[in-house]
Image (tube, rainbow, N blue to C red; front, side):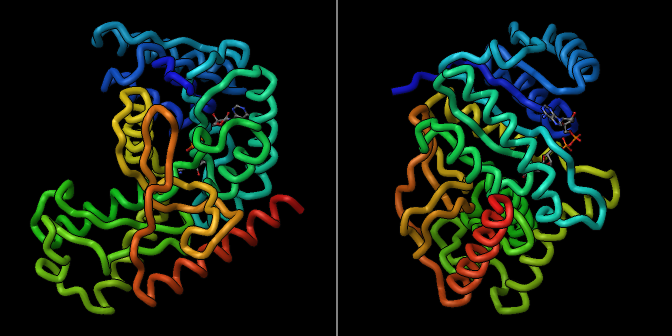
Length: 310
Ligand code: NAD
């Protein structure tokens, strides 16, 4: 069994990597944060800047690192690659980022260390699949951030509509972290009461909220070129759950083995996470519409995996 080292290694120190590191630093989730990037000068500057911030913590250490510094039990968060540009779909990023991720995984592999890997780079489902297949690490320790960010957006949106704190909203976005993601509202609830106690849960509401969540990333990118604070806090939560063995449920991108009638695909479904990694503890009941949309999402991700392997 793998024991978390309490360290997080962030590969890629751009907007997303820096935001994840900064969230982990400010919440004092790890005792040490290691940062690496091919843009060495920029990454070293990020480290210096975060070391300044760390003086206001209880002593979190932030260092520039190389692959050789990776050790057993570290959580390796992969954010490197090209970012989604305005008007560009996550799928278009596929070819460029698949190449980068294969290279990064092979470098992690040469360290021969037993680590957790959290893929964040897009298209995250395809790249998480590649990471599982090519890292040789136990499958429970390798996953993508999946629809954790989309789900937080959904809970926020329903919470605002219902005038209820989003922490009391229990509903997930499942499927691809991309254009075929789907809200699962049929089994959603607020304090054990069906969602339609609080919001008018008709087809129009479903279509509107699905579109709203899906377009948030595009809207943020249009206005400020990249999204990073949300994923920063989301991945910090994932790291905290592994380090503190919290047994929390998150919709991560994991390889299905017959669950939801799908196999050999990595896609966002709720799983339990702790220091052992993730475990698929059950299946969310889906109505006919959600089942069809999930099947479509699986098809899309599978086609992208095939394209990445071609
Ligand atoms: P960015 O361009 O700001 O940063 C990417 C960094 O990766 C750069 O600093 C670059 O130098 C580095 N890099 C490139 N190739 C590398 C390599 N081989 N080794 C080490 N470093 C390398 O981009 P960003 O805004 O930080 O976005 C990063 C990724 O995160 C993108 O793919 C983006 O789509 C994704 N993202 C995912 C989610 C999610 O929910 N999964 C959310 C937001 C962004």
